Length: 452
Length: 81
Ligand code: FES
Ligand SMILES: [Fe+2]
Image (cartoon, rainbow over all chains, first blue to last red; front, side, top):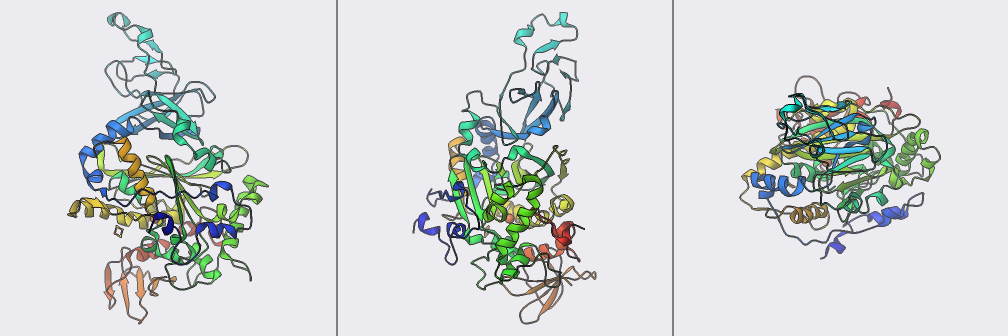
């Protein structure tokens, strides 16, 4: 059996067949259907556990790859700075002028004796080191040195802060420490096409939560690259979530899953009513008042789509009418290698996964909700930081029921790390189709990080 | 009681906040037990349950709506309060 054959779930419709029943015309990009076909080899476990792999990632991945720094609105005003830390390195991004060319990125280190130039984001007029007072302009030119007579070897024109590659897409600022890297545009490939109908630059940060998870960053990330885990990790979703009907695609450095909602999982073996499918999607229990009702002859998908369309009307205006049901209802999750996850359509979710500082055994999982707005841009939500012993549900006020879903995901992640340390095996086994995005990640990873 | 039927096993999971473990589970044969939020057994005859379902029930709390029930896509009458 090939990966191509595996795309049709054993029971139920393929995702493309589901799109045929949509009430609106479906965007062309949702018709793209490109599974990863990368064989069935195991992924080496040492890649997740060894310090050596982490050191190789620092050397070959984080120092060379395009990566998300922050949202552009965090660097909106001249003088705004942002400190971006990845593994053991720190970078400083500065807005020195308005417009797309007005951003600069530097290693976050003073050229005198090396102190980090800034410890945290904030607005400044110049970049003065707090140790001895060496000072640079926002463009990175040396402005002054206390007791300049004592540094006869320092020529101001040779003492500019070294500039790093920077770019923007979708309201995100990207950075690449490698001066020889290919352009951001070529790296992102089809990503702008996928998001053409849902411009992420026109969103604001409605919620922002970062949590320490006690597992390698790749293990944490991989729990968010497939819908295969829904059957046991999120059983409550099954009456209204077509886990096995999901479509998985890969496009260069970008991959995606689209999982239909408002349809029942083919795995449950019984047929929920449309109302039961809707209730499941809204976490309505047997004794709860119904949140929404499915009118006679209608489907759960239609009701969910209409509720989402209604919520978007105040911000999107007539544009909301053009959105198809699938865009309004389904889980559409995208990954940009190596670690950024903007969700498609109006799902609003953005994730990023990183090592927790220089510790390869724990990760930072960052979640933003990016909501559309009308009129003036609302202020960004401030970041909530949760530790390794905290729970996602501690952030339920800002993340809603999503925090409870992450709580279920988190239940497995430390245990995966423990299990991999205990297993006698040398590799992890992946499925051919549904876990194809994880396999694709490792396919790219092997090209970037030789020797792991 | 906020009851939810496990879509695969048919067991009923419900919130029972009386200090005995927040999640009460009743299997198809009517055997019941009390469990903590991670599915660890506290009391009762029933021994094995789905821990992820217990987490879901416990995090949903005793009443419908509110922040725990809020969808990221839209508001329903119960979640706007
Ligand atoms: S079933 Fe997937 S890790 Fe065990
Ligand atoms: Fe999950």
